[in-house]
Amino acid sequence: MNLKNILAASAILLFASCSQPEQKAEPAAAPATEQTTPEETPEATTEATEPGISKVTVNADDQMKYDTKEIRVKAGSKVELTLHHIGKMDKKAMGHNLVIINGSMDLSMFAAAAAKAHDADYIPKGEEKNIVAHTKLLGGGESDTITFDAPEPGVYHFLCTFPGHWGVMNGKFIVE
Image 1 (cartoon, rainbow, N blue to C red):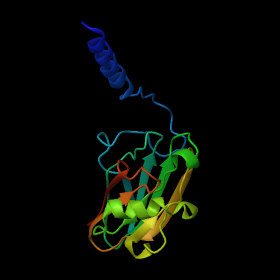
Image 2: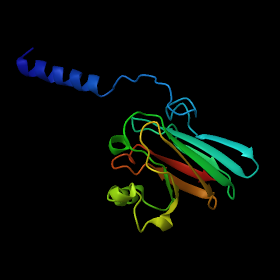
Image 3: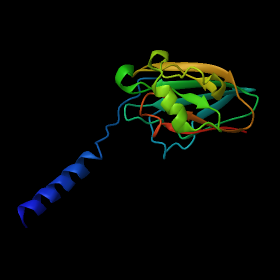
Image 4: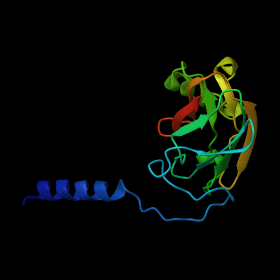
């Protein structure tokens, strides 16, 4: 094998070993639920503890992941949504929020507008009509709970608007 082939093989092995970081199970900083991957939990934790109220819990972590890709609620219900940032990183480096937007809104266009809204915690001014609800921007160990009325039946989107996160941190907010 010549030097060129050895270098190419070494680069491929190095890249392969770096692309899948070791994941350590860490206890959740918040008392909510155990951290899982979207494949293990396809739907957010939703409880109907009182008639007409849907309590939803979503976790976000330092690997830029929500623990769900889908949230389902009943039309006309009151939604109590809690976002837990179960990571450890500061919100300046790995901030997370959860923003629910109209289903007709293009995610990439909304995220581009949000990325420019640093002073407003990445909630873009002028897009209020497209936002159903949103949490605060959180750092590791922080939580935020918001309460809002479920909109009309349909499929909406949710995403993290911290720059660069929306591509992997997004899902469907389904109102039945």
